[in-house]
Amino acid sequence: MTAKTARKPRTHNGHDPEPVALPYHGAADLPAVHVDSYNLELRDAEGFIGDKASGRAFRALLDTLRQDAGDLAGSDLSPGRDISKQEMDAILTGDDLGAAAVLHGAIEEFAQNLSAVAQRFLRQQAWKGVERIVVGGGLRRSRVGEIAILRAALLLRQAEIDIEMVPLSHHPDEAGLLGGLQLLAPDVMRDHDGFIAIDIGGTNLRCGIVTLKPRDRLGNTAEVVRLLHWRHRDERPGREEALDHLGGMMRELAARAARRKWQLAPVVAVGCPGLIAGDGWIKRGAQNLPGNWEGEDFNLTEALRERLPRIDGQSISIALHNDAVVQGLSEVWRMRDVRCWAALTIGTGLGNASYTNMEA
Image (tube, rainbow, N blue to C red; front, side, top):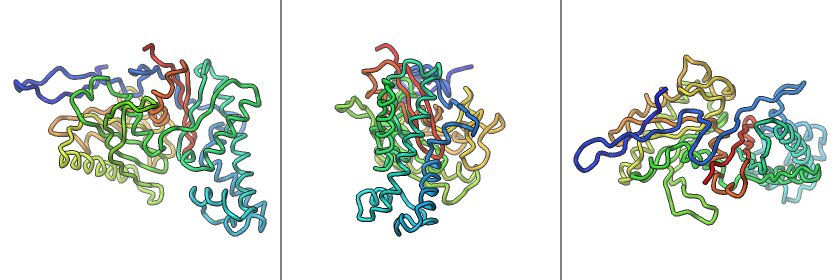
């Protein structure tokens, strides 16, 4: 298989420079880490164990407790009413103690599940030696999620499991874009101001421009300067409709960069659920996406390239990997003090990935 390439701008004498190789889709060896595993599908008698610690699982636990509590839950958590993460956070610090008690009960039960799921992953060969687990996903961007993650960390400590569990340091809307930098060869950004990154999820699509910056106190070297977000689950589109919308987001960002005279690299970094084949199709694990994205008859990278064939006159290359892998990669510089680490992402499902840092 030939490596995908992205060309740099023409040199002063008008000749194209040598192309820069990008890692393969779903690559195990990346510039900063080796991806030991991702999209592990562990089961028990009830099905996939990750389903017990997903965003859907938390909502189901909360709905059950709301039903059981009846009028004790108060009006803020009356059964059948859809509750946003912001509303749940307000309940935790509000005056409705009954609602707060119900919510704390859901957090505790979910944390127990998250701790148990983490322990199952830690028994897998690919997770041997993991010293720290970073937890991201949509639930993490709430106080409810942060408490659940830290409570699960305490449960691991009480079980005498010498593993750190910490919330993702970046906003989840940005982490899946920032991690895309780690999918690119180190010198791709040398002559460019930024690149387009995409985070495809079971509920949301995010597309943004990532630029480089001086390294901050955590060692981060990238930031999202423009972010477009679409909650596609509310509109229930088909696959092609979703891809057309995503294509429009990419073209909007490319046009914005051109107006601002930002020189974008002719690459797009993409995170997407599922097990990624080396030539850009999804083997399995994309069941939460709108329509059918799995199988060799649909190539995601080709579909994206059709909708944005060129950036600044240059044909684009696409670097595709699993979304949990990419979100975890946003934490690379925070993980330099350990050798092996892992990521869990609490979204529509529960994503997972494990890594070993490359030697410096």
